[in-house]
Amino acid sequence: EVSIAVDPSDPERVVAASMDLEDGRLLLMASADSGLNWHRTQIPVSPGAAYHADPMVDFDSRGRVFLAHIPVATGNHPVGIEVARALDGGRTWAPSVRLSRNYDRDDKVALEVDDHESSPHRDAVYIAYVEFTHGDRAQKWPQQLGEKPGSYEALARPAGGDQVRLIEYSKSKKTWSP
Image (tube, rainbow, N blue to C red):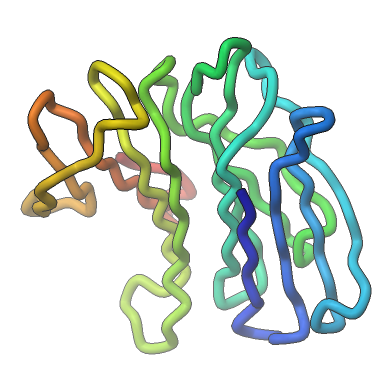
């Protein structure tokens, strides 16, 4: 799986991420010249994980890059959702922060940053993922999506109780909230 993003404040800056099947770490690549040259880096595999999966990258309006991914334990068991940040266009990354610790339940991560100039939520970071409550993760997809009043948490409640969760980063509090 791969992800690519272009910096809205400087379109020559590009970041790409992919799974590296040789050693389990994510391969992260950054370019400052529209992809003519690339700087390659990796983030360390998280404690308790054998490898990382499902990388998603995006820039905010100030050129900061966010990376969401799933740490996976031996036996192909997801152990949560993590996010990392780079302040230099994707060349170096801060250690990942674990946002969810649901063993063998979280999957299908997605990341989006609100970089719209007129948005009241500009630079808010949103990470969505599926929290499976039982059964085969690969066969449980939400069938109905609604929004919980008064929060940014979107919930899907198909048969069996699987849910789509949305986590938002609060710029003022510098915290993640479900």
